[in-house]
Length: 115
Image 1: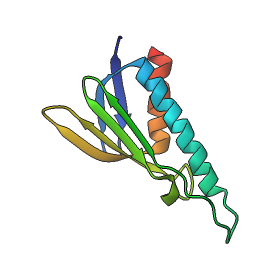
Image 2 (image 1 turned 180 degrees about the vertical axis):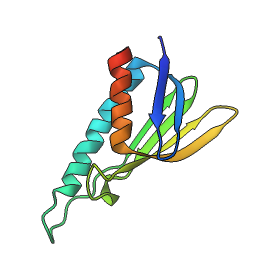
Image 3 (image 1 turned 90 degrees about the vertical axis):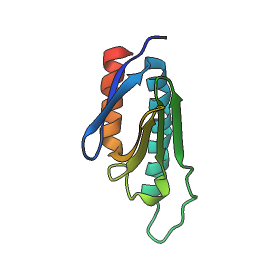
C-alpha cells in the first residue's frame, strides 16, 4: 500500500503527514455523508424541528493516527462548519480546528494527485 503526503490547511498553519489514496477515498466518503447531514440541518423550516444528525468521527491509522470529528447539529450551514482534527504518533499530538470547506479542497487535491 503506497502512501503520499497529505497537507491539511488548518485555521492557522497546516499539517502534513503520510496518507494513502485508499484512506483518502474513505475520508471523502465520510465527509460526503457529513455534508448530507449538514444540509439536512440547514434546510429545516423556520420554527420546525429536524431530527438530530449523527456526528462524523473518521479515524485512520497509518504512520500517524488521524481523527476528524464534526457535529453537524451545531453549524448553521456546511460553509460555516469546522472540523476538529487530531494528528498524533508516539512523539507528538496535534489537536486543532480546520474549516470543513478547506479540508474538502485539500482532500480533493490529494485524490487528484495520488488517486
